[in-house]
Image (cartoon, rainbow over all chains, first blue to last red; front, side, top):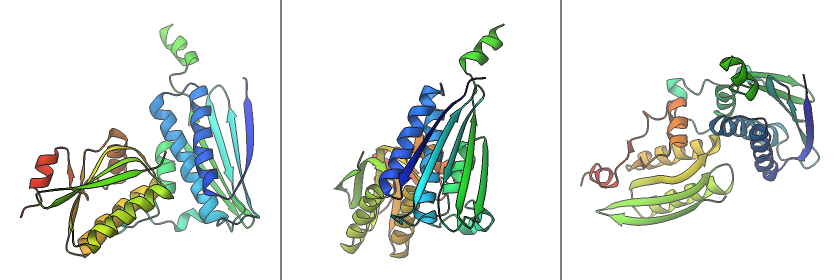
Length: 148
Length: 115
């Protein structure tokens, strides 16, 4: 199994959010995902970057965001870490609950979970690590197997 | 990548033509400012034309919700027009499609506000 890894260390800025999204889109496209999947992956990374920059590092110029991509034959694995207080995902209200529908925030993690196949959130006192996995469906290898 | 907006009046309804991305930062601010400006002028029948909005993130969704509730709280109405598939799908999965009054025909959308 071949694996490609790339890692970025980014400032806690709005530019990081845009940069993370663009990078994710490019890597997902290179990994062979269809356009719609590329959009979902890029958006999931954007939302994760927003969480890291805003809610994690709170735009603190002294804190960094790291973004790792790993491509395997089966998966695109993305890990984003911040240096904030640690996100307690259990305390995020369900954005689909009727009483929360008209809230103006709180949909980021929900969208990430909607767009990715596996989402793990590991908070600690030194920051939050959010791991997202998208399985490679309909890849060239899969197509060959399907046609045999 | 920025968002642009322009407004026009049709039969007492303000149509806001938006294009670009409604995302955290400039896009959300543009939407917030244009809706606040209209409400401050007493223009409370607002039809947001999202036909050229090709991308929206959770912050943009939040801004749409904010615009909707702000307008409603001031006795106005805010409706959405011409959703792209991406925006339509996002409103579906966030269950907001049924919250917003969504139109796909401008003339019918304008008429729906009543006199």
